[in-house]
Length: 110
Length: 125
Image (cartoon, rainbow over all chains, first blue to last red):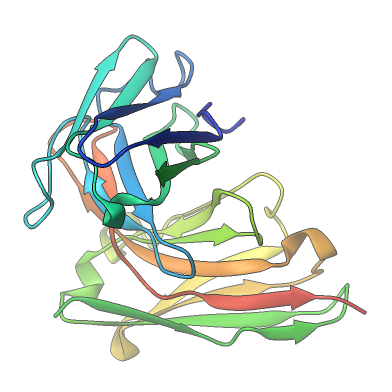
């Protein structure tokens, strides 16, 4: 099972919006409408920020939003803040009854 | 507070073994599927395996590259899950996280929350 495809890095200025894409196959992202996204600051554990493509857990800012079209899911962060600088990972369940993550995207807030 | 705490990491020689623990608190451990995920230094997250609840007969599933070498188990009386790692290779060097599986309302609907802080496993001679 290959990792889902994410851009290695993305950057934006405070207040701007950025979008991170996550591309899979018909065996994972394209098969299920259930992608989740995780934020990970350096040296910290991953934190759930989006589940089931577009749902936010309690306590997660509404500046984070998710969507999906076909085999590509997307995470959008609006009103960028310095605290958003982190690595972001998408994840999907697969038809092999396993789970697969994206390679991760490093967000830099300029 | 829902919490997972890993322990047991350390330095081990290639071909050696190590057993990691994941202690859970703040939720009904016996009703929760537990996953192990690892992250090599500077690399992304990689799903390692999972163990189901008693209802599934504690069914397990593994990443292809660790199948036959790694074994996940759990002790409900201790609210703890374990990752037994045998025949370790340098490629197994990583921080190992445990995390709780949250099921949604459809097939394939699930997510991981929360995560432990991780424990570092270093395989080196």
